[in-house]
Image (cartoon, rainbow, N blue to C red):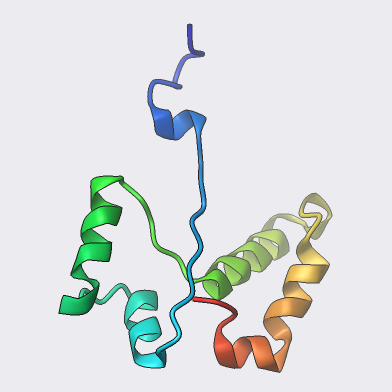
Length: 97
């Protein structure tokens, strides 16, 4: 029997699937969630599985912002993540898309 509120697979399991997009125009379309024809199959698969698409740089930036809002002592990867997103090379390439 599942604890109250845990009635779906999504409440039990979380996965990450990472992929690189080498073409900068396509990468920016993915990052902005622009459903251009070439990306339609990707967005269809994501919708079918109730999956969210997020740029790694944006995820790291959100982690840093949350840590700064709620107290960095509760975020063990804060210093590393902050240093990573402040690295000019990482900012330019937005980490990996």
